[in-house]
Amino acid sequence: MKTAIYPGSFDPITNGHLDVVRRAAKLFDRVIVAVAENADKQPLFTPQERVELVQAAVRGLRGVVVDHFRGLLVDYARRKKAVAIVRGLRAVSDFEYELQFALMNRKLAPQVETIFLAPKDEYTFVSSRMIKEIARLGGNIGCFVPREVLVALRRKLSL
Image (tube, one colour):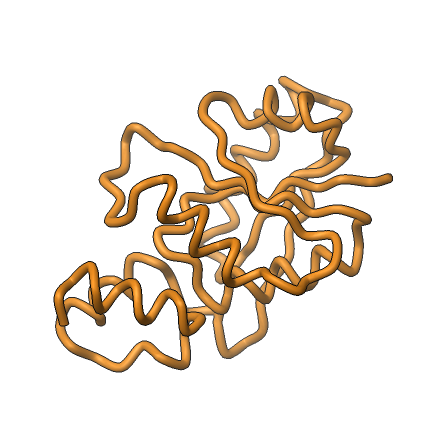
């Protein structure tokens, strides 16, 4: 069974993330959507809330599971016996940053490949940070996030 890890903070998960998950699920037997804890970020949602939102969003997708991890991604990938790390690329500006991580991960774990997947055109400009900002300002984000995220954001931001 070929397993891929799709890591991210997913604060919150967007339809762009889901598009990448669906694409990855066509390529691998199992895709682990791995909610990461990043000490450098101040997430709006707790790790448990993010896991629950991702679980709700991927419900029904065959071969897709959700997990949570801390620490080095390649160590997590080894523990899960993953053959690949999936990363989404929205724009050329993402590429340099993601390439540096891919090269470092290759050096640390040469047996784990990094696969770049681009979301549908309609999601190339969507980011979790942008979604949170639009939601804070009262804008409509319904076409960019799953329903569960929309509800959770409204509740969290008391809108």
